[in-house]
Image (cartoon, rainbow, N blue to C red; front, side, top):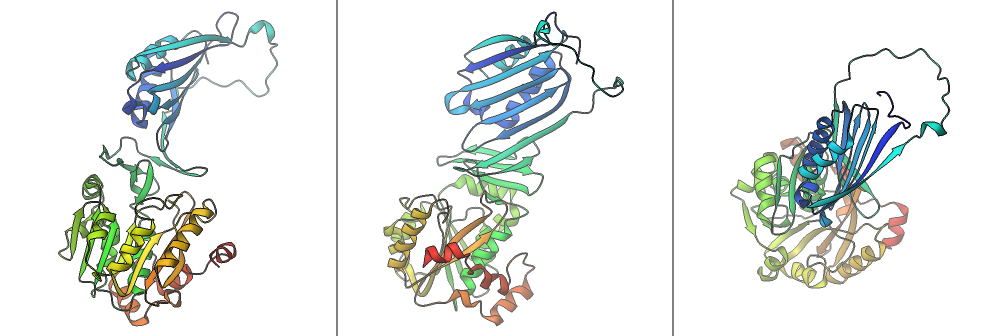
Length: 424
């Protein structure tokens, strides 16, 4: 750091920016660019930076400068940003950074208060051990940008490359694709991870093959959600399946997947797949009786049972449109954090179906690390016994699966003690 200001060690400007452009405040890449520009415009030497985008909105970040730091947190829903500008010495003027950020974030107005930090008259210089540091050129700038999928009391964060590959707000949700360091391209909806390029098979393989191999002879399948194409891809690995109807309410999900996740979305162009852009519950309500052998709900279960896809009328419709035997595979609320909703939905499904079994899917891209699903059958099926050996062997011989095998199939139905007691 440079020499101190007369009488103090540093200048601290506390900034509040109002009436900012919400889209700019909710874009971690834009916020990072403006913070870095504000530091450099003031003459600061940038050392590193780190920024996190949170769900459902907001960005936090820091720019570490040789002369101290700049930090920010944004509230896009209010068009508001809180900023700290701390500098040491004569060489950097924090007010230049203030004006730069006000302009760059599109603030209608702002307020700022300057504090002088470290009054020298109150301090006593002490000896610091070790040889004096030699002057060296500033290190290369290290830059970190992070996306955080944050739920009520749990989160998962992924470092990403910067500018999003895709970002569009549809009539239903914000659809984004991040290029992450750990998992490649990641599709998110309203800030929640839907699938990750390098890890999606842990989810899609387990759901599709437990459902398909838990049924003795499936021919027709319905996927509600699943606009990325991953579940359809796995179902098409079963030659006995003649048709897969994918019902995705949001065309922008399909657009993003076609553009950036072709390994999943290519399945949507298979002649056995029919893609319907409409509401899944409405589609199920008008589907003919006994039209499907398999139904998959490929959307997250929330913490309650009031949504159209988790209520009693929907499950009654699914039972009606299933042949016998028939299978519904659908997500459950978290049994620990949302035990009341879990039990309420379990009771509803048991009232509608002949058999209900709970199984687990483990994936590190889920904030909790695992997800529980219900295998609900019209007719009496026992999926926990494992798949038919001959059909499973043909599946594994014909495809290089990453996660599913007969042992994993059976193990998925082994419940931890607390959950077995809860399920009863």
